[in-house]
Image 1 (cartoon, rainbow, N blue to C red):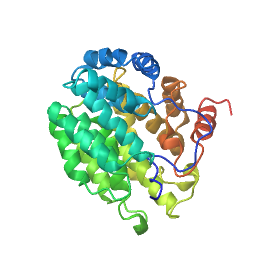
Image 2 (cartoon, helix red, strand yellow; image 1 turned 90 degrees about the horizontal axis):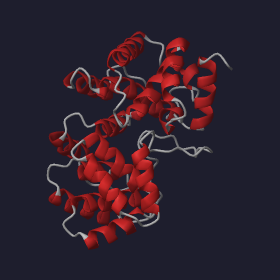
Image 3 (cartoon, rainbow, N blue to C red; image 1 turned 180 degrees about the vertical axis):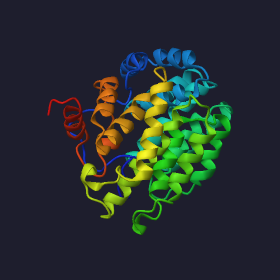
Length: 316
């Protein structure tokens, strides 16, 4: 079997710095450490407390599922509690992560996610797992159908929208820059459909960065984002201004994935040359750097982040 492609929204170069996908979720960090020691009861309690906060549940399950030991402990949990939807979802998504790393068969992960969906019909997380699984070679499921399954359960699902943007951005890579590319239409539509306070307002910025990733990897744009001019056009400036204005008015301090949005927005403002606005975002980000978009198209993400932050804060 050939190795799987890089995860959605990530460059191919392996970063020297360790990133923590838990971001600033301290409860998640604690439960993850307990799971590493085989104490799955801590994860059980965490997911019970999470309830039907679907964005938070999706974030916590996918982060827990990244750990290499999670599938084994999720099986133990499921043996102890065969009707546990939480255990089934965690097992399904952990098998997805194993399949993405080439450590398990995609069909096993697919079956586990479908089984979890049967135990938790209202939960979008098993369908998020299946959407993640679309990155494996030979994936046969329809991406749009899976996205619709997620969206029918939670219309503003943050992670699923990011995955769709990254996937759509990869279409017609050889065509070169196209201001009318479908990824822009999708991101604008999603932002307009969402409530006024929804972080999906940042999605057009994500789309712009993901399209840069694809165009730069195909050789249509320079591999140095600031030199690419991708963030300097009129349309790009409008997108950045609208997203930054939304952040100033609606900053979602409690959203579990807000730091992913802030990294995209800080990256865009830095590339646009708006140092003061980027600095405000870097202050909010602190040390919670995310690989995307700093790795685009094939860079060491942490080095790129540190250079941009130092420049924006005037300490370069």
